[in-house]
Length: 125
Image (cartoon, rainbow, N blue to C red; front, side):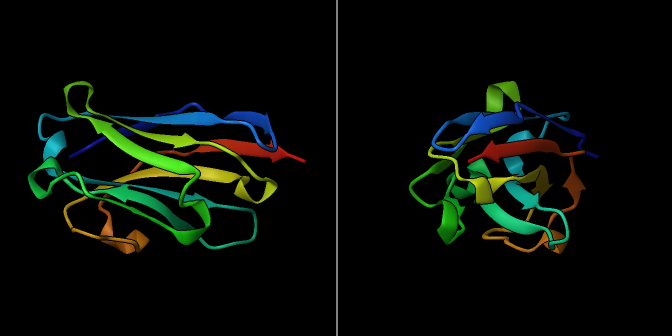
């Protein structure tokens, strides 16, 4: 069982930056692939970024719309995964969710077993 708690959301102007954190419980954090998803009002939850387990090389993956602007990373000693978001745009506004799973290169929500409660990110124009 893994419990995930996101933090770091807020209101920011377009062009600004935020760093989201997701603190995980459990002693096997490094064995999990971690993902970030987002959901805007009236839209489906969508994949943002993922990082594979350390066993699989901490490989990263991004959806095209955030490549070059967002960076996912993990600190196994702190059992935390981060999402650094730069050059934010109004279309990045959504609730951001952290997720944990065991599949490599997972981009679909049903490929993740554990979820956080979400943190709101609002980007004003």
